[in-house]
Length: 302
Image 1 (tube, rainbow, N blue to C red):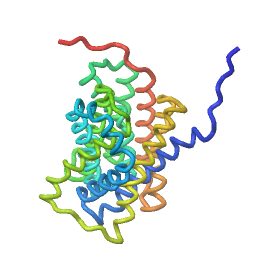
Image 2 (image 1 turned 45 degrees about the vertical axis):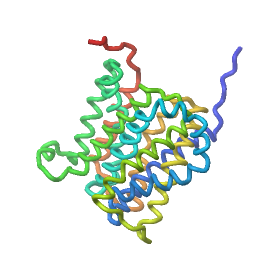
Image 3 (image 1 turned 180 degrees about the horizontal axis):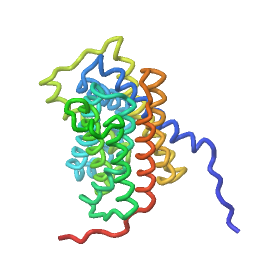
Image 4 (image 1 turned 30 degrees about the vertical axis):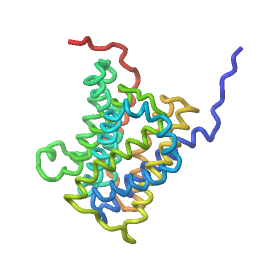
């Protein structure tokens, strides 16, 4: 008789710590938005991560340079979507919305991924995915409208939320591209090269918009962004996937809106309202329903 393997307690701590780090980063992003421009914090973040990774990754990247040449275009696209467009737009959104709303909208990534997968991978979403997506989208509109759907028709009051939705939608492309291409490279080497491309893509924006100086009001937030959510959290997440599997690990991501709201309440004194509760519950229930089953059919090529 085969004994059921018991999951060690520390394996459950790994994804919790990763999600906590990412949740805190959303609040840090909102806090520091008054002290540094979006392009500046995005550039500094990836510069710090690149410098810290270089002693460990440069030699490994050189060893697999032949494989890297085969994937340069794909690495550039991944860096653009995951580290420039998503992060840059999210940093811009932080000027116009709350950290609580950013955390809730960020939880919408799995739903967007379903439809981007349909577009790029020809995956057919099943009825659970469609019903769950509809419920999540309803909850998202409820949060953005602050509990009043008629408020969505007024212009100018939801700019930050709209930007965050765009950022999350673009990040869904990043995840689907990773699944579609399955790069034949060590994971951290791939991340290292994506960061390198991201830094290059920042240069035209810096040339046009300028680069803010680091000072006592923003330096700690910039260092945090460059070290913890960029390096430590992904490593913790990858270790969690190894010990728990991808499906069990992904469940912990649903805690991000909760962690973000609690941290924002304590640190930034943001208000958690009834529309956050109702909308957040609808979004999380919809995501759980959408992920209940995966589509097994594939659209026929036209």
